[in-house]
Length: 113
Image 1 (tube, one colour):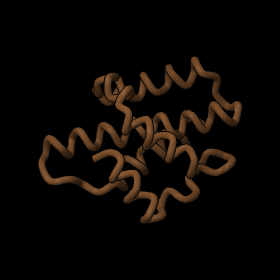
Image 2 (image 1 turned 90 degrees about the vertical axis):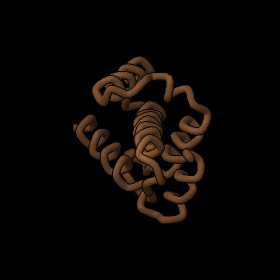
Image 3 (image 1 turned 45 degrees about the vertical axis):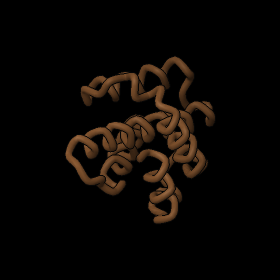
Image 4 (image 1 turned 180 degrees about the vertical axis):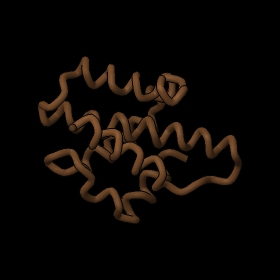
């Protein structure tokens, strides 16, 4: 059940963020948003003791691979910074809490430009 909520959260984040101008930029932005969402929500689960680190890493790699995204995106400093911000906004149960806040969305978008 947690995994379903996890992927629903990622899907929600993936479609919420604003689009940028060119198609190539849009694709790269989507990949970064998706990666940040995977990492952020996964870190929340790790910190709450619901995932161990190996499971977290496996889930993030699996999610990226299933989408056909390059794993190198995960090491991007801005992706990691956005992931920490996303993690900080999740509630005690790692569900969306302030993720719909416009200021928050703008801040994440600015980080991932």
